[in-house]
Image (cartoon, rainbow, N blue to C red; front, top):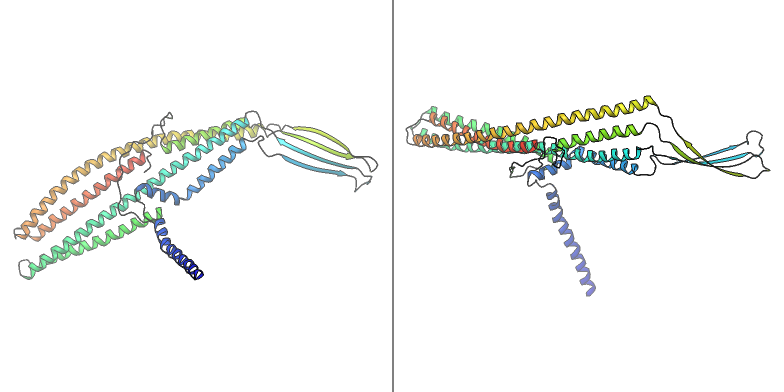
Length: 420
């Protein structure tokens, strides 16, 4: 009986585990494909899918390997050579000579420190480029984020217009049937419904395109709630390399310039190939009758310097450093201009939003008065449709300005180098 109970418990445990896995796997898949809860989450999703992110990791690993090489005892690995000399194919008197040589390259004066500094600068450059690339990804996500918000807002307004047009058409058709309104009014109401349906279809197509773009960028669907950002003071955009944190784009340009100057220093310290110190061991005999003799020697190999090659390498490194310095100055001006333009755009968006609010209030009041007059028979349908179209345009303009202001805040944060 105990054996049967044990077997039943085991089968029950297996069934329970299988049921848990069956119920848990969809949850895990849904969690992996869940929409991001915030703009920062969307940026993280897009960053994980970005094709250049893995390449930056490999570049940093390469730079760290170069730093390890610079920390070694020799600039290159040691080498060993083995040689043999005999007269077997000649007189064949037993002459035999074996030679083993262990060669070790040596650092040139100042070369070790220069190579270590160059490797460290490359590590810093890879890290700065990663941050700058992440900021670029954040800019793409921000634009798509507000494109989806604008498309959703347009669809909401189109749906509201369609519902209002259908309600009005229902009232007009009833009044037309009892003779209170003319056939022209009935046709106008039906035309308004058709126009609202066409706008609804166009807004749905635009929303589908925006959401597909978001999914292509992040790999997940856009969240139901698209939150806004607040204006955040960003890093230094003036290129002041003191204690202040640099704008990511300026930091990347500065790191590239430092790396280029480190390569110039390395080229100055590497004016010839690495010398070699070799330990030679020779074991030989002249014929079969003589015993082997052992000889030990030391060899120092010092390559000559080629003036043309030194000038070529130094000029190439110097040209790269000058180009990086020029790009740094250009990046400073570009970042400063983008920040100024984003600030002005936000100020303009604030003013336009205030005007849009006032216009919406006036249009809404006119629409209420006109609807009341139309219900009392004091106004015709054409006037009502005209006032309603004006109110609808004012409402749409207000929604666009509200979203434009939110997008302007995101663009200002982007220009200031602030990640979500």
